[in-house]
Length: 548
Image (cartoon, rainbow, N blue to C red; front, side):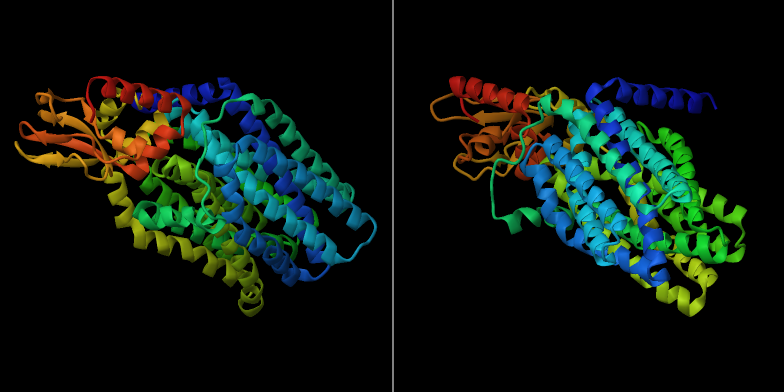
């Protein structure tokens, strides 16, 4: 109990650091405006669709919104790696506010339903640029690994607040006015988000991707990064399964409120609010994750708990049961988001981080659309209660099948020794702790016996090396061999200058090293101005004495 209190105390202190970080605080406030607006107008849109076509129309509007967003997301996410992320988010907010104002005009003037649906699709597509940029910006603003997790807790808690406040605002406004009023009010929340982002235009973001390959190559970089890493594939795959269920869940919320529980249009907002209240509780519980290295199993359990409670609604379809169950689902969603997003941010190279989140959101949109379009025929064929049972059983089954794999991920977190080695190297010391932790997780241990060549002069440079134990000899033409021991490093010149190896390095004794691949080393060093400057200083020093 004492240890738990101490850990929660550390977690609250980390959350306090997030709030005292001016840039992170403004980013969180902007996110709050964005998510509240998104959920408030979604409730109004669902009710508008139901009034114009029943449950099938609710499924259709999900398809119309999310399939185009799924197709656009990988391309929109390129913006977050090619351009400074704050302007990308700012423009997204302003465009969404304009589209919501257009939807209000359409409803007020009794324009065709299709016009509202087209603008709703446009809002979803524009949103695909905001969320990856926001998620990719957080690690560069966080000052410690604990602050990174705490920032994700804060973001997810605010998302829960959005689930809670947004639908509540939508439900209350619908009870006293009409859908066009909700659209106008929520356009204002996007303007609030833009207002919060404005001062962040002055911050110095790390330099982004310098190369400009073809658009298709850039857009698919996130897919390639996920395809190369088994951990990322599992996390993204489980997230995709969760949002498939969430797509059906969105329809089930509306039908449960209107048809099963007979709560009326405002009931849609109230049930969504229950999800948000549970998410707020989940945000506080997620504080226990701050500082935790092993998050994969927590992520798996949370994903399973996102679906399993629906079984209770199918069995006991009362208003009280439904409110409690939806609260539990909201709690599980937030815990899963904190754990899963932190796993992705720790494990993804910074130069493709926005695009990996773009892939994730593309999958979100596609699976939400599929879930939304499959739910109505399932409801029509089996009834609401059995639909709840079937949808609720999907995620527990999938998580049971991946438990062993998730346990493997938790078995080998970055070791303190690896972190210490990287922190002591001038090239890496300017990097934020979350980035150093990410690099430490990608170090490859290597052993060499006395006399073994590690690199050879003239060879292509593919790795950076750090000596953990033992000694190496650096061999240069015309100079006596130079011995270097634990903590020394070599191989950076060939990587940074894109030239062949300038020296031969061999093991003087039995030696243990860590190697960092070129694709991990270069983005981290060249993507941060201070780190790049430190690297140039190291190269200048080496070239002034010798070359490695």
